[in-house]
Image (cartoon, rainbow, N blue to C red; front, side):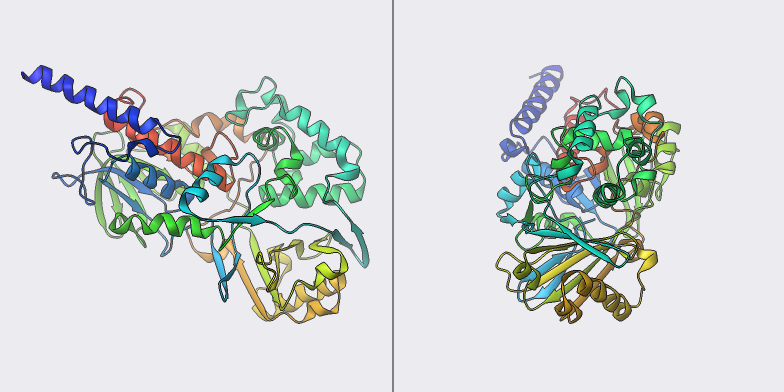
Length: 496
């Protein structure tokens, strides 16, 4: 066979391998790819060059790694700055096999990517506990309401938001017909125009603030509508427990997804290996400068929050649009979650669901985070960092007193207390969720997803559906792996 025919044969073989890889939703159809398609050794091919370097061992990065491995690509490494995997998922070990999640934890209807991943990994799920009455504390006042069947009196406002969301695509909200006009408004400004009362405003402030990490007054209406759009254009699906994105939890906690995927990688995962500098992203071979030396790769998947990408020096500098996106991306929602543990979920005996909202104190929202068999009572909470003492005993006692006001005196005596402030945990978590302000997406959104040279952008913020959620992270990992494979096989040669 002459050299030209041999080249054509190899090209056809690589494209056939890519089609095999694309055959399954998660590249599962490519378990037996040929040895000529990709570099094999963990440290790269015979030239010491990896096919793919993945930055970040959260859900996005590990999903991408899993897909590459299943597609037959062995020449990759996952580089994680922390000394653990999981990214913005993290479990508190409460003992005897019980955990409480310090980071992302819930999934719900429509989040098929993460449900599929959990099933493939053999990780079971169970329903969140939300039956019963919510408690609201306003000053010294205490009132209760059962919201387990939906938004109640706020239904007309919810329906208005749902209708508006139909016109704002979750994939690229900045392309909506009225994007510029919508993006001038915050959610808070829009709500103020609806003439809602204080009780309704408290409810919206709590639910929207927890989903997006910022109060409605600082949140872009365009961004929030895009999140609703991904949730079948139903705010109640985005924000709710019953039939919503908070309906289901993972047995053993959400971090199990990452730890299980990591176990299969062996020496293809490097912890405590932050990437400080990326050189030659516009050339065939990219250099990644890390605490463990220089790594060379043909493709790089940056499975990072956009603002974290700005901690890396790029040489040459990134194109101005992408550089500005990273520089200006909001990173002001670190989140702080606490855990109170009791011998049993005593609030259930009173017909309460453990959800407590405080209008004017350190508690944003507590919720029942007990294990499936309720062998312990676990109250987890989102708190206002500035209003809660940092000293653990003081923080515990302050919240215990609030819980006693809402749930009864038994709340004063927790057996365990845990506190995780994502803003202080490490230098690699700037923020938990995307607190996007008005005017940002219409100016910078178009630079978020397109690859730049050999750089493929991943992470939940880049997802077409369920952006900012764990499902979005998984989806972005699948897409990034496929983009890298396309580039390696030549199908994406002109994309970068």
